[in-house]
Length: 228
Image 1: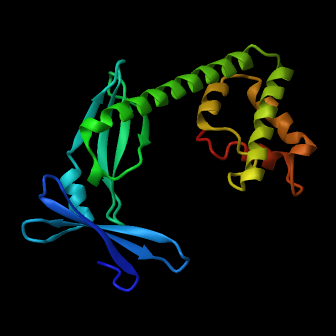
Image 2: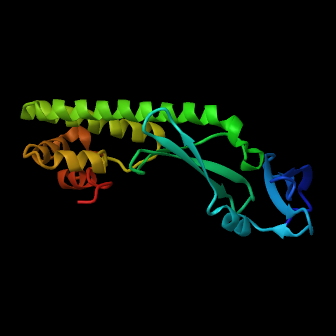
Image 3: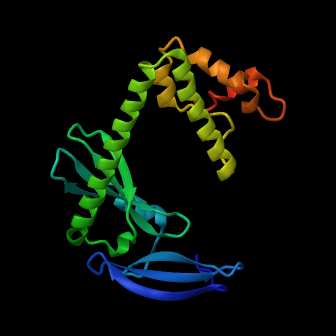
């Protein structure tokens, strides 16, 4: 259970009305970094409680925060099986119970206090909802502009998206080259008769192809992240 060779017990503290206690062990890794393992024990008999057992005990535990609007936040405990760390995942839901977003906050569940967390959770949830609203408005504006445009302007709009995506792939070193379409964009634009012809013109442009790839290869790669 414990790394006796590279580990050192750094903290011991009681949780859950002193019914359990936590042992924190700091591990010195070979690369010079440190990591922390957490072990939970029953205070009555000293029995070690495995992460899997803790997951079962938390499975029905939900903390609820009411927001000023028609939204609420549900917080559920997750357990890291490798380290034994316990964290809270916050899920923002609307009045119908549909999930509108998720977030995490710094800190361990071992130190969690529902009463003192309320203000911070509400602030973070409202910020997430505001961000989602702004993204929604921005997406709506994009589609309105696209559908109101001529074929040439539609191609320019898609070309801008295509080039911006490829540039981010090159700078970040991740992502599938050319695959700028996501599911939402595809689902919204596939009804437009200009959509596929515009994509084919973009794929046929020599400056958009690398390593002697064909127009057809680039065109197919655009749909890499899409279920058609």
